[in-house]
Image (cartoon, rainbow, N blue to C red; front, side, top):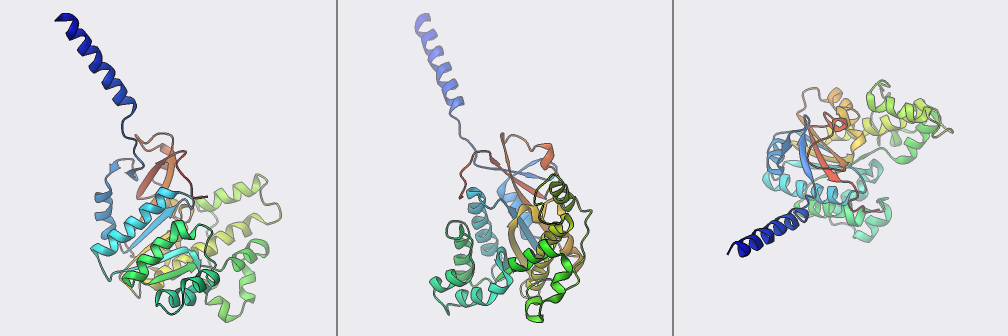
Length: 294
């Protein structure tokens, strides 16, 4: 009997070790700004109370795009006829084309041809647009046309003054104020100083980023006149550390209740690494090496 008992114990121990080696691997973990773990349900409840939700994505993160779709669906289902959707991925001069597609006036083929959609549109952003179309959620193309940001990068902020009134309607009102001492903008200047982009001036490079941030904030503020709440999707750099879009939106709407989300990757998901703390109200952490859409 003792031999049998020893064999059973050994078998159980081996099973436990094997099970531990093959335990479930989380696809993501959510933390608050201080590094405390938060459930999706708890995050959702807080987001429902905000006027503006700024979701900072990594553009090629497949799981983040899935969560974006889930979050949009959950928020707009819980609070129907309340939200507008804003997207960095659409430039302001595409708003008419976007409206025509959402309103069923043009076919998707024409929309895709004329709206300058990103290469990963079908896998990553189409679900958002189709949900908005189905539920009649207003969608705002919030980004400045890239040709104008390119002009600023090479010729400076003042070049925008030379544009006609029709073009100026697709960006934040001029003149655009820039705080070059914001952490994110300082990092960009440092990057330029390290030898990148020698063809352009470092301040102009920052200004090109700032006109995007200012324009997105401008159209988010406009969207708030149409609906009570806005959920906006953009690259995380545009709202990390409560800068970028946040800085400009608070100048436009000083009392606005907003919450930010930032997507990051880590080798481990047990705890939030120090470098990511206070980057946003919620940090969604994904494992390094996860699938990328491009």
